[in-house]
Length: 427
Image (cartoon, rainbow, N blue to C red; front, side, top):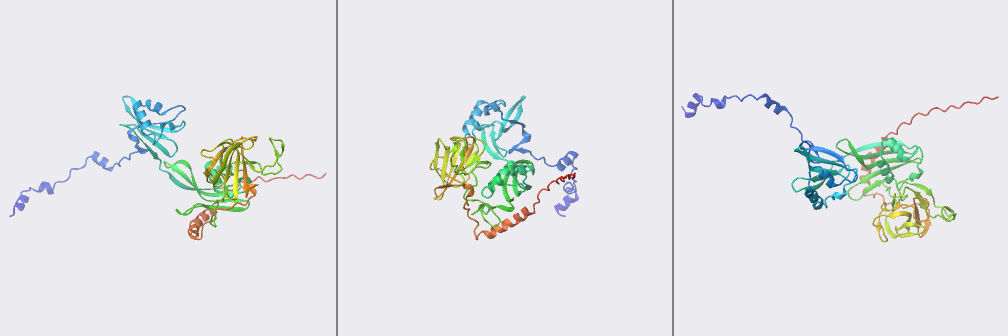
């Protein structure tokens, strides 16, 4: 017999072959079945490791005031403020903004280990107060969701959008999309809108703003004005109608986002200050003091000055044909001076009442070939349409969006009470 057979007969291998595994204890079974606890994170930091104190910066409160209350000494505060100024200058903390302290409890005192400041709903600044200190920037993960909205205008576009659940920001975006196409001053009751647009969310349910309008149908004066945002990553990134024509004109219809026309172009206007008939060769747009004034087209600033009649004014030459002028500004925008280049929509100044003016407004003047004309009566040139090369791609992109826009239903109008007219009895 071989040695292995002898050993086997003697039962030497019994412990290796026949030994049953020890039964698991009740605690071991529970640990195996229980799921691994997920670490809760906020601003990229583990929440469970700290006590969180949420607060809002109050008037006059400084970076040092906040941290001294949480056991951080002046040397660390100075190190953060000095060494990381290029990342974030602590003097830029603003009252009303949120911050969070990540603290540890030591000897009944709360000691800050991190401070997170939120300059906006999305962006944040992390101050690492451990060891030698550190500062870095972060941002919330933003989820973009598509939304749709439609409504019939009864009084104003702004009110109608809000009535249907839209936001003021959406009204501003819509006015920008159609700034070259629709005169919002002439919107009529019964005009309607249909929109597909983006909304931005953080933390699943917190809305943090309105994104881009993707497609729209603005029905005005019996006609549908379509717009589609087309971005092909190389050549186009703008709004076009269903035929591929750009909604952007060479000139904006007005130098302000929101306004009312207080005085039109009139060669025989009675001047309210001079008290005599004097040609008014511009269009007055009344708006609150400080409202941004935009250049209506690309061009070069050929004057940014003051005169007794015009007050603070800016004059822009757009090309050899067109020149515009903006009067009665409270002040010029930063960097606006003679020789500056401006783009369409750039802020060049702010509404005021300098010069001969009875109230805050901008007088907008328009020259064609050296002659002042009424800007509202001009057939302004359009931007370039989509070329034949890219038209098939645009059509493939646009058609599904147009079908979705056309399928949106308008809100049902509330039934009107029948009007009863009593007949008068003949005597």
